[in-house]
Amino acid sequence: MSLISLKPRLSEKAYGQSQTGTYVFDVPSNSNKLTVALAVAEQYEVTVETVNIANINGKAKRTFISRRGKFVRGTRSDVKKAYVTLKEGDSIPIFAAEEEAEAKAQKAEEKAAKKAAKEKK
Image 1 (cartoon, rainbow, N blue to C red):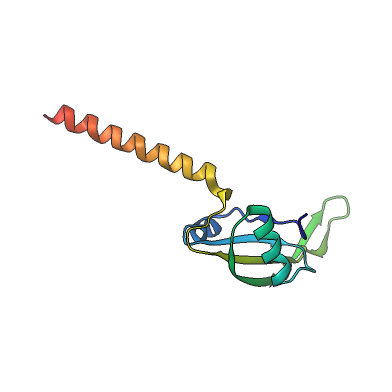
Image 2 (tube, rainbow, N blue to C red):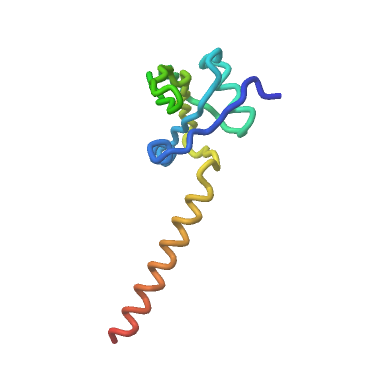
């Protein structure tokens, strides 16, 4: 049974870090490093080496209400992120679709290069 709910953070920066073995998750605000490590190890069946936690405060925002002609002030909700580094050789298939698309594009590029070389002869 999972201790906490993990939501993978799908961004370009997170994708870049996943290539080096560090994965980023949005976690509940009451979680700590130990509970995050246990939850990742249990859900994805991998070995966790380190966990770093970052608390991100919500930004102040304002919204215009057209009926009253006034601005309403508010804040976005706070977010807690966990950076999980895995043991060498372990991986989590979070970005599997992106990697498949990348492989398809590379295969198509090689095919086009072969065709161009064939036409050149």
